[in-house]
Length: 153
Length: 221
Image 1: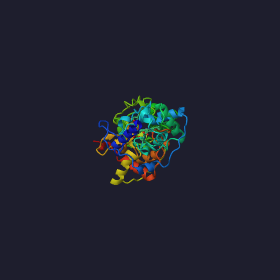
Image 2 (image 1 turned 30 degrees about the horizontal axis):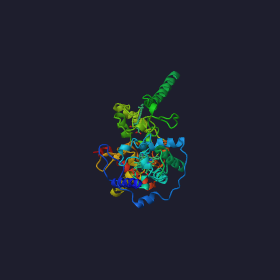
Image 3 (image 1 turned 90 degrees about the vertical axis):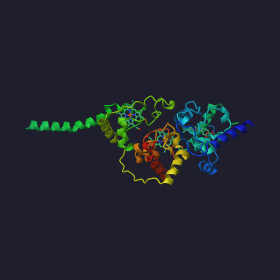
Image 4 (image 1 turned 60 degrees about the vertical axis):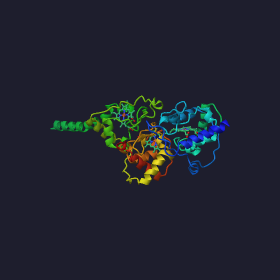
C-alpha cells in the first residue's frame, strides 16, 4: 500500500508539470507546462528492453559522475547542482532512499541511457547513450544505489 | 656606398621585423596566455579560461571587440575546469581584463587571426515559422539543451541552466559554421566536454545552427 501511493504521487508530479521545455526563469517559479511523454515518444527513444549488469563502482565511475552528472545532481548527488534551481523539474536527489527504492535498476539504467522521457520522467534529464559506454552506465546505476544506500524493493 | 646599402638593409630588416613582433606581443604582453591557450601546440592545459587558439573560427569580430571593451559574462559558473565550477563560485571569472577602444580592436584583430582551418561560410536560409517552432521544442524538450544553457523564451525572458555557456547572445557571438562544427565534432575544440554527445542528422543539426543564430540579446525583454 505504501509503495503504491509513492508511485502514485510520483505519477501525479509528472502529470502536473505538463508539456514543454526544461528551462526556467530566475525570478518566476515553475510554470506548469511540461507534458508527460506519450507512449509513441517513449517507444521512439527507448527501443528495447534492457538487461542489467552489476558493474563495479570504480574511480572512473565516480569521476564520470562528478564530470557530467554533478552539474545538475550536485557534488554529493543531493539534487542541488548548479543547474538545479533553473530547471522546470528538479534533478533527483540520489541519496533519497524512499524514492529510489521505488525505481528498478532497469529504470535507472534507461533514464541515464535514453534520458528522462524514456522512463516517464522529465526531459530535463538528458540522454547519455552517445557519451558514455555501457559499462560506465551500468556502474553509474550501482553508484546511485551506493549513494542512496538502497535497493529496489 | 657599401655602408649606405648596409644601413638601408638593416633599416628595412628592422622595419619589417618590428610590426610583426609588436603584433605577436599584444596577447603575450597582456598575459592572456596565463588563462587561455593561444596555440594548438600549447601543451600546458589552461584550467581557468576557454581555449582561444581557434578564436578566428569561432567568434564574430564585432562581438570580440565589444567583449574586450566591456566584458560580459558568458559562463555564469566559470569555465568547466575552474576549481569552483561545480560550486557555482568560479575563482577566475570576474573581472575580466578590459581595454580602451583602440587596444581592444587591435587585440580582437589579432584573435581573429588565430585559426585552425580556413572555410568559406555555408549559406543558410532563415528559419520558417514552422521550423522555428519545431526546433525550439527540440531545444527545450527532446534534447534538453536548455537544462544547461540559457536562452530566450517567447516572451524574450532569459531562462535555462548555467553550466554551459549562455546562448542568449549566440547569434551575435558565434559563427554559424563553428556551431555546426561543434555539434558534429566537439573534440576538435575540447578534448573532454561536459556536454552530452548528440547523434543528429544533418538537417536537424542545421536547424539547430539556424535557431541559435536567431538568439540575440537585443531580443531580450
